[in-house]
Image (tube, rainbow, N blue to C red; front, top):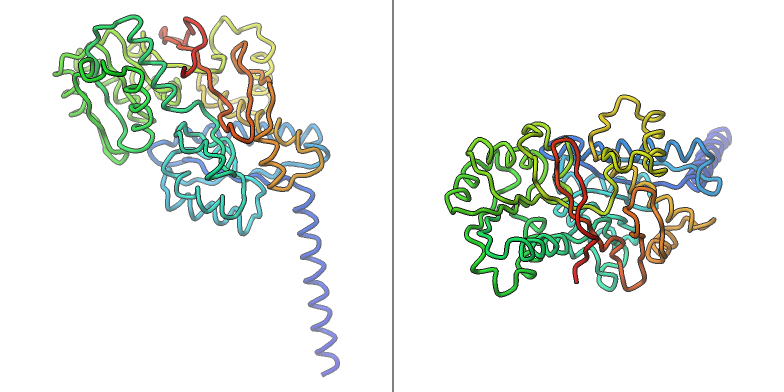
Length: 396
């Protein structure tokens, strides 16, 4: 009996030591969780996570953040809310992440919105422009990482009113919060002219195989302006589809998140010439930024950490950009990397300059203002890259 008791005590002591060591290891790391669609209809956005993983690797190689290394755990949710829930619970309850960062999608983030706030885990820089993410009173642990979709819609509508006041507008929108937010802002800016200017409006489900019938309907309306609130493969289908229909609207608008070359290329870059989008970031492939220090630093990073990447794919620079924002927050945490302090610092950003932001744009947040990016510049595709034009605009 005595021998058994001694063995039991030894096992318990070993287990306690292992637990203590595991806790020490956790405390020696900054644990960041993420869900992204590495598979499924929006798998093209998985590149964002690859770039962020590489950037955090760079930070670790340089000594980490205040002596601590970043443990970045990014999981594939295939843009499926049930998978997002499953993976997020694992990241929080088993991997013990201190923060969720840069997860993509309105529906997917919505599925874990209440859960993360209930657990007091920051849900930072959500890759969705839904208005709901900027609600510091209702959901203090959630913060958006993009300009609001509604604000982007306002900017496109303003441009139409200023340059083509008698436009006949067709709208194709994804049938979810993503699509509805864009359209609501767009219509808000058109004001009492919306009913007369919008001649056709249809939607599509993200599970749909194609949008061919919707495009045919919109063309038949006689519209000369197209606002395509699309994502992923549907961006390619829209560009190729209107070309095959022989439909050439005077202006076609695409959301910022749909403007990656990886979505344009399958449809033929020549078919996307003249299309309009917007951004608050420098287009790293635009010759006007060839000698920009921030852009040169980005390409040096890519050469070292992702040498086989397609440098024309803007999702790499997007991932790099958001990772730099996350690092800025972590540096502000000094020696306190608790979830509470990470949230506090994310809501206290003052004139933070990020190398890939357009000149004159900085990141600012406050306890009552969770929108880090509120300005955009219109840009037009020239067959090779997106070229900015006009002046920086905001939703005012």
